[in-house]
Length: 526
Image (cartoon, rainbow, N blue to C red; front, top):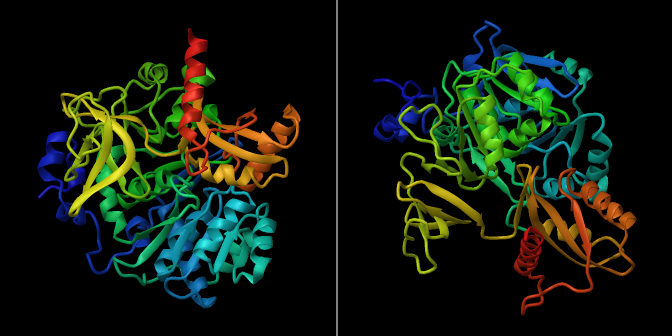
């Protein structure tokens, strides 16, 4: 019987997709399965076939083979055993895409330890939160970030060893064997994946088991459309959900060469890599497409796309038109969260599926979603309600508002909570507020997202200060926030006010702030 990877149509997805068919794509079974084996070891056949292509911001390219990463991961696994690391202990790594990144990712998983990828632009507060949550035995980073990590490790006597992933470290690993027998069951935890602070004050880790790689394949096959033979690329950081699961693990599990970006993002550098590597399938954040359009350099390169997908936020009509002009295939939205996975897709590569611009698409095979009113009844086409997902024996709220059309396509109509999505990054208003409130000049603070042509949204902070607001104070608050959270997580706009609207419980009423901002925008438009 054909495997799911041999089907490409929407009709075939509905007819043949099943849990049993997914398991046929893997070596492991419901009892014994290891992500490192499925994604790397079983494809290391001595041929030197490329596994990951890395486009560095400095213009250089790096190509890592399945053989090279597999051998390095095995050596790292043996090294962890020699350090006394036990099953279930966390191994964190704060690295750009590189040989050490993939060696750590897959090596830790092989031993039964838990891999914890961390974003390289984390400041002290953001890193401290995650370290305190996952309590890693070892944190591996680069020379630039090592002093920060060592300082945090020393605070309060944290039991965390900091290792610099330099050439001497790779030389140390070289003394160990290049093969390793995985030590995990399918239901063992393989990875902690941190959100960027979506609906909580603290960014809880989503704990993925090794068998998560199997359920991930629904999103891969029908959200990104990845298939053997594709030349795949995902410029999103593998420290976050999309870049790790859809951009890295999913294609590698199918033996597909993937690509990624390292260093400060540059849209022109990305387009050059897409041309040079002959990329036929790309999955990216909406802002990546928008920044490529805004560069004005689309005509300087040749593109080879057959499939495109995006996530994180809607793409504006002007960018969709640019994609049609230069990439000549439709950009397919896929919708989901780190917690629930991808649930709505547009089936890239399916000739019998019509992609409607602006639509989230239709459910992944086997899933049931509805847009519901507050009383739990389904909405009529065009009526806005809350997007709900059926899980096991009840409806689960996605915390988003949506609508459907007469053909059963879903459309996003805004977040149901205080989430800000800017340039593909998901940020918590509460987390930013709490950081800003630590500044000596900030008495009160309210944070919302406001529309921005380039980034979709940007963070705006309304500040009650104990001194006169000024451009100098604004820059100081921006630096104060980005240094403690992440380089992208700060208010690009600061407005000084005498008071903030509050609800009866005394909490900042962000909806009123959003309504006030929308009213001002409408007045300016008129």
